[in-house]
Image (tube, rainbow, N blue to C red):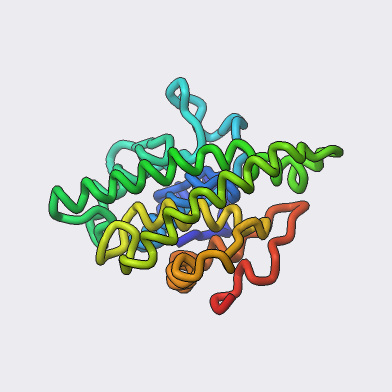
Length: 241
């Protein structure tokens, strides 16, 4: 749950701020971490940071660190985790309830399989469609790359068929309970939906699954996102879209 108000130094001094997440609102990996933190009801401070920008508060980040970056200052030593996988595995290890990885090894294997599928398959969409949308609306590029947009839309539609099949036979993507696989897939789709690029009319079962995900309290901060220069379509925050 995100908290705003006092600045960084005041929070540390008063002892009422122990965790911070540096993130970019439209990045699917950052969105996955935000959903997981909210599902586990972990109180944290969220700071929007441009991808590739220097994080001034963390001068000694290890080489290769990239968004999202999570700081846990609740213990005797400050713990810094960088990257979606590192953060999600860290909070799963340190905040057990509610679990986002199943207890049984075979079920965890299925979650990891679909989590990896989500990140690997959607990477193509991120590099083309999502990157071009950000260039258009956030960075205000004067000329759109229509080839990238077409490639991205085609790539997205090709992934939706697989997800439609899963949503038609499973309550959640990896089985009967919510998992990191659901959060990753929902985070990616929400980033594309922010620009109105998901053809929900083609995937009724997936749309029903996504409506359930949108209705979860953990999704509220994502649905409230507003990035300067952009305005999501009306259905983006509509739970009955």
